[in-house]
Length: 168
Image (cartoon, rainbow, N blue to C red; front, side, top):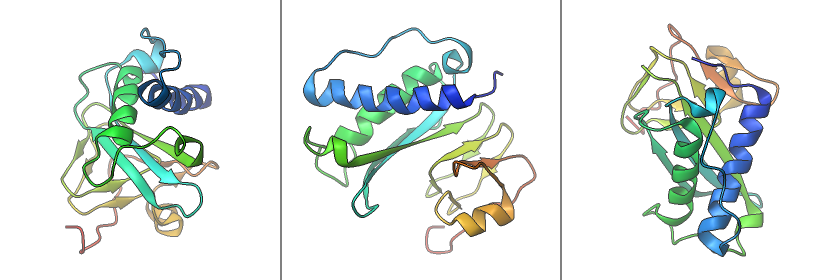
């Protein structure tokens, strides 16, 4: 399994934004062939938040690793913008005001219902319990997990996730 470099993570963010643009305004389509870590099957979540107030604007994920990571991110980015049942579809004029966050699930990880995850990499063999909250409270995340300088939470085997009783 290839590690995700900083360049890979930046490419995934750009890919998510370009994929949403294609769906909303018909600009150029993203590439369909991916290599390295982006070509390996992995699950992913894309979260959209309004820049002005950090409010959720859409979030869709795919837990199963059925397609290359690049394809998965492109698909769930468009779904987060257009299919999240909690929100109307994103309009083209809203896109510049939206921040995109990508979370990656390594093969062999398990995420149970009602877990809330953003800006995270979930390592293989990790079970994220129902009601877990990852990537929302920086202090709590630092107590339990490794957090990169950019704020990406890395959850590795043996680490206990914070479980919020309200979401269990």
